[in-house]
Length: 23
Image (cartoon, rainbow, N blue to C red; front, side, top):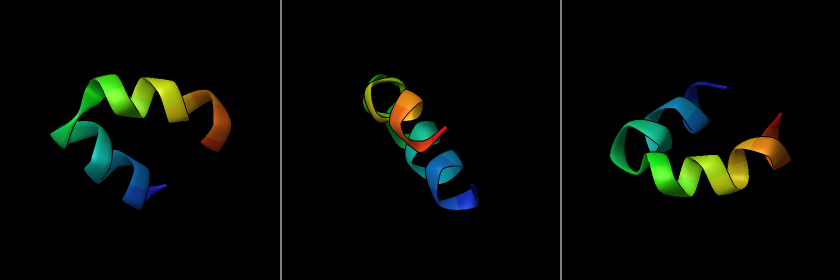
């Protein structure tokens, strides 16, 4: 979860795309 949070902070756009995948 922390790894995703770090990526999200750098690129929320990318996190959103891979967000549903990680969740």
